[in-house]
Image (cartoon, rainbow, N blue to C red):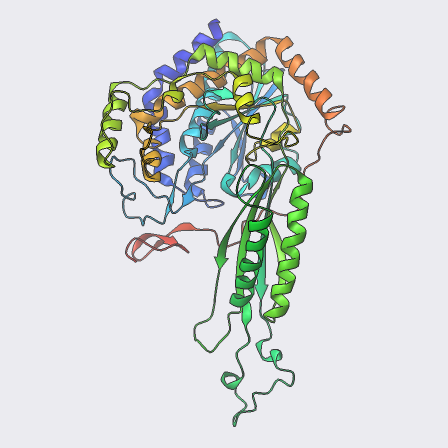
Length: 526
């Protein structure tokens, strides 16, 4: 217990510092593939803490791989995520407003990844401190994983071999749905995800007419009948895929699919056809086979839409991620450390903020304004039973996240810690989204979760490094579940066979003559 006490003391002594780190990442609010300042912040911090850091790992400019060693011992992996979501630019405040000088449509942290990353980081840094002080051998490998919201970096890191030398991996996420609160996943892990981008181009508008002639008095292009073009192709694709979504992929427990139009138009006059348009899909499915079925349908819709609108089309990948794999041994060990750390608790300062928010949204002020579940432990088996009660017996996976990529390279645990959320009385309307986003950025309300995550992760790392039996049990189970370990008969190889999709028009912040502005999404003054 002495090394764990050292780690816990480190976390407690550095609270002001890591709380500021969390606020810094929350304030950046950078979206997928464009987390330049966030990644640089982590890289500088880890190098200052003695890690060797590869910036731009896997060919991704905002990814990193950081390694620290203290002699020969097990390699334990973990990671930070730090991408935000467009359209959620909420300030860390008790009123609804965007962060300074930004539009409400800019990026903001919803899960929040700002505290996810720092919670994981302080767990690894605290374990490092204890390993140094007590002469514990081992190797810590900490990744920067950008673009999680589009399931971006982990399939790429996995395919490039970055996870191959791990002995175990710890995945942490703030609670986002009951019963996954202050617990670990048991059998039913997250499913697969397929995310393609379809690009439609209209390279030969005049060729739409058989003879290439307008029949008009002058042979000028503007007299030619207007070809449907790329906008029409995207809209046909959008409407066709809606039938797939409605009849097969209806949002729920088995399937879901979302889409976003990345690029439309590129025309500057109303008698010119749109030459380029793009649409992205994200299908969250329990199995790879289901993902392949969805892909075949989407390809068919794309080909039909392109033919109709006189375009050519191509498909690029944003993500192909595998479903998760359970590991009871590592889950039990992590839950034991969570129980020892205790669930997060929200004191007087946090309650006062919650009361202000209740008043702001017209809810009655209550003595205990927070959801009771966020301050209680949930046994893994109990959470599993509640999930299985709502799923078909043949459905093996539920919800979606790309931590699942780690699961096929080393024993992996999925840890959930309660994040601040207001309680809702029967018959009462739930708080608007901005309230939970704000609670994720206010230090008094988010720090209790971050602290508990750090303590739990540090304790788990130290157990794996000092008690060989724990790691041996997790590895034995991993070999059994994969049918022989990596490459075994039940093992799933990485699906990633594509380059990092970093060249698309992802939203980002740019510096202009007007100051910092949002690109693609509207600016503050618009």
